[in-house]
Image 1 (tube, rainbow, N blue to C red):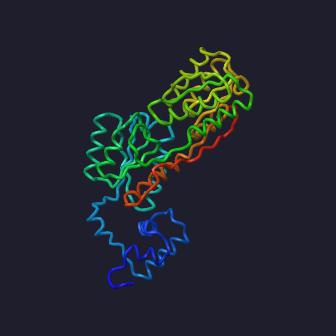
Image 2: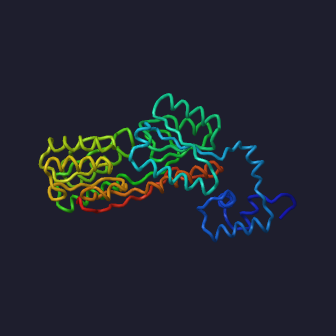
Length: 334
C-alpha cells in the first residue's frame, strides 16, 4: 500500500471482493454473507481504513432518513388490509438494521403529491419508496430525474423506468386457475382488482391467459380490493351466471366479502363453488371455510425495496426489476 489514507478500493483488493461489497459492509448492510463480511472487516482492520462518515455527510447532505409514500386514502391505509402494515414492517426491519429513520407519508390527492415532491426535493430524506401506486403516477419519475434515489413496490405503469420490486402476479394466478381447471371446474369467474393498479392488471391477465389456454369462457366482475366490493361483485356474478362453479378473486379481502355473498345465496363451498383468493393475509386462515389463496411475501417486498434504496443512495448499481415468487396455498374453499 502506498502512503496516505487507505481507500475503499484498497480494502476491496485486500479482501478479494468488489468495491460495492465493501461499501455495504462498512455501511452496516445485513445482506452480505458472514464469511465475506469477516474478510472485509479483517481488511479494514489490517489497512486501518476509517470511513469518514462526517465528511461524507457534509458532502452528500445525508439525513439518514427514508420516506415511504403510500398513494392512498387514510381510510384504506389504516383499514384491516394487511398489505400496508406488512410493507411498513419489512421496510422498518431493513432500515433499523442500519440505523436509518422511516418517514411515512400519504399521497392520495393532488395537493399531497405536491407536498411530497417539495419535501423530497428539499432533500429532507435520502431516498423515497413508493407502495400501492395508482395509474400512471409521474411523481416517482420526476423525483428520479432530479437525482433522488427512488424504488417502487410494484411495477410502475407508464414509461418511467425506476427500480421496482414486485411478485409474479400472472404466474401465481395461472397456477391458481390451473388448479381449478384440473379439479374439474369449467365455469370459472373472477373478481378483478382495480385496473389502475399493476396488481389488478396482472392478476386479470393471468386469469384470462389460463382460461384461454383451456378454451373456457371468461366471466369478469370488478372490485377495489375491499371486502364490500367483493360482496357486491359476487352477487352480480351469480346473476350473470347462476351455474358458475368456481371463482378466482384478486384479493383475500374481496374473497371474504364474496364468501358471504355465496353463503347468502345458498351456495355450498367448495361443493357448489370453489374459491381462491390472493395475498394470504392472516384473515384467509380464519374465513369460513378457510380460504385457498396465492401467497405473496409482503414483508419481504418491504425489505427488498428498502435494501434496493439503500444501495442506490450509496451510489451502487441495482437491478431495475426484482420479481419474487408466489405460492398457491390450498385450504378448504377448493
